[in-house]
Length: 126
Image (tube, rainbow, N blue to C red):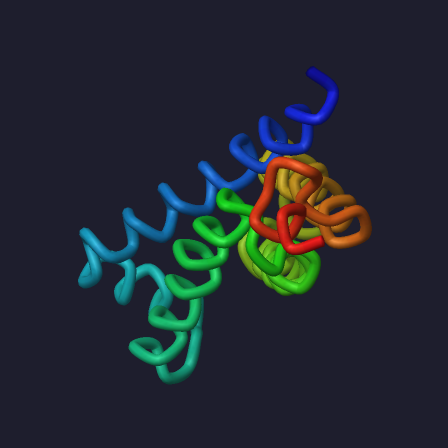
């Protein structure tokens, strides 16, 4: 049973990103407007990059393929996005989302260090 715990962890973390990436794809115009509202440059390019990191990264983590590098990229991405979207130093209304995202970042960093576990494509390569 213990060998399945990393799989369950990957499922939980990856689901967040897969759904967010899918949401951005399905409502591309709203996502473009949201990024414009937050002052992002080259919004179309940035949005495609975000979708790749979220959706494709989420799928890779879910199946356990190149988990260490993918989780590290996703952790850096989420940390930077958290600083931009949830500036708790300007308004404490962002506190809960800020802390939640830091916790998810911690989970991604843990995956980055330990890898996907035995029930992953990376685990079957050995």
